[in-house]
Length: 316
Image 1 (cartoon, one colour):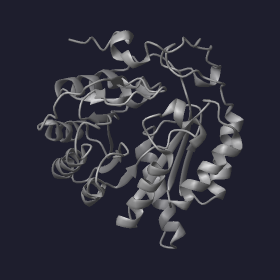
Image 2: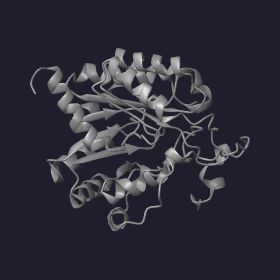
Image 3: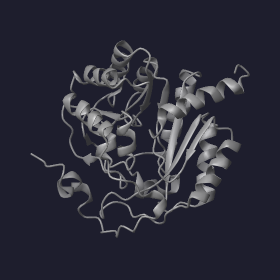
Image 4: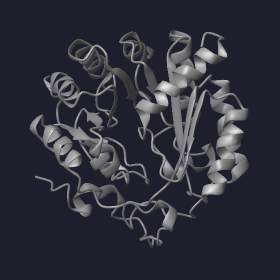
């Protein structure tokens, strides 16, 4: 049995890659180790329900802050991904069969934690005909049943090898926010996200709006991978052409020496410039800071985005 705590077994596809030195982090992205009682309570609830979180699997730097407030991003369909993106710390390999009881356990945890807003993501499941779309839909419905007042945000894979009906199935379950990350600029896809296609992901976001124009859409990228500022602004324009509502931009942090190198640390001033540019392009909500991640402060940001739409429509 694989021990996913060992880098060599967690990422066998990266064993042949060159070793990249991990640069010292600047002061503006250092965080404290999690020790609070709130963190421990959240950890215990997740453990009791046998749930996986992207917070742990992807090594998120904000786990201490979020879990101390009872917030966690559920990762469904197992902890092993069928792809091996060079930036990602989630384990790669052949996943186990889907757990049919998982949607109910997620819903129970959401209810127990008393979440006002939940983010549900998953590994890529290219081994499944529908990419896990029905499992996403079942999880959304289960949360709606157990916690009807909780708003639901999903962060999905790209359903690259699936029929169009897969995406339609997820949208029909009516999450409040549909998030799918572009991750980086198109020129870096071969080295950063080799199993994906930039314009397919962009089209996925556009298609969500065609299926349900009222659904909020969200996408994010990392910076510090070697992109240039004009390329980032072009991605903003591409997202707006797909009517994406919410943009996140955060600093890429290298999980291990075998992962993609950090080309540079983007300064807080540059992030502020990106935020200003993005609002100027018409996004309803923008989060652009070194520590921004897809689900960081997701509940508060969702409320602000909803208010911003109402103001734009003149209904506030």
